Amino acid sequence: MTNATNATNATNATNATNATNATTASNGLASTNGATAANPTNGAAAASGSTGTVTDELAEGLRAGAAERDRTGQLAAETFGALKDAGATAYLVPAEHGGGGRTFEDTGQLLRRLARDDGATAVTLAMHTHLVAAQVWRWRHGIVEAEGVLRKVAAGAVLISTGAADWVGSSGTCRRVQDGYVVSARKGPASGCEVGDVLVTSIRWDEAPDGPSVLHCAIPFSAAGLRIEPTWDALGLRATGSHTVALDDVFVPDAAVSLIRAADRWHPVWNMVMGAAMPLIMAAYLGIADAALALARDAVAAGSEPDRLHCLGETINAHTTAADVVAAMLASADDLRFDNTDEHAAATLSRKSVATDAVIATCRHALETVGGRGYRRGHDAERLLRDAHGCLFHPLPRARQLAFSARVAIGQGPLG
Image (cartoon, rainbow, N blue to C red):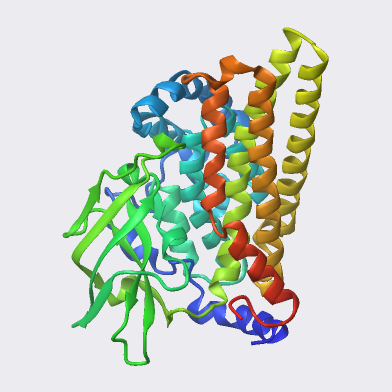
């Protein structure tokens, strides 16, 4: 598939097939804790105010509990609820659909600001927010079905993603039954699943009539056969609640299926996903780097030996690169009006790799600037460095990104 053909097909395909997993998430959302578009939360309205309405009033609370949650590995469910009440989960939803009406870049700044105080909570929020961004992209491109999902998010529904692990081939089993499908799978990591309302996922269907396929669907957490397995115990981002969601013979009605595509082949929907998701996710990690830079500056203020100044200079250089590249990612999305071409996805993923290296380098140099005390368990510097490494594992890991971008550059298509 040539890039020019893909660009045309990607634009045209949206009306029929573009899904970010959630074209008809409205079906799953319709049964979430009684939330309805007609009864939006007060928090959604609050998001239309200044950024400070959502962030500054909650920042001290986030920071105060971050180290303890890292130690215990517990998601800040109560804090996440406070963010929802303040409008953070509906920040990006257009005002005409009951949300905050903020821009894509505003939303990136929100995630960045939150991550300075609690990286794990900010990354968890980014996992929900990138799904919202995909729906805003669809709405901006004339796909009216997105409106229902956006209104339900404004009413308080939290979306949980499993897309990174699923990728092009997906996993699980699926069989056709009357009026729908019965699916089984184990999906993880699913960040924030303990506070989620709808699982936005995909299931492999090897026996599909047209050959191995992938079913994209939305499943309410109240569905029979869905359970959370507490499996998350990681090096960093320990308080994201990124457990495994198990699906055992869960019924998925036809109306909850947003897309059926060929397995193991590139689909234009992924170009949209990359462009909508990665800038927001990396904005959260940039906030972690911000916090590391602040620690390094404070350390030098307490003592300005030449070697410590050198370390701070390295921290500043790495942070400048990270900030510039993430800013470019957010700007290139054109407030979710970008064309979902292979070229845009490749550029986004290239920037993601550069930003990843720079975020981790910022945190590493900051630790060196702080000195040996920063290496001790419980110091903010060592926690920030551990958390920063999470960005390595969002799509695409560097080696796969290099091949992806190179293939697109020579006209082979993302998967060759």
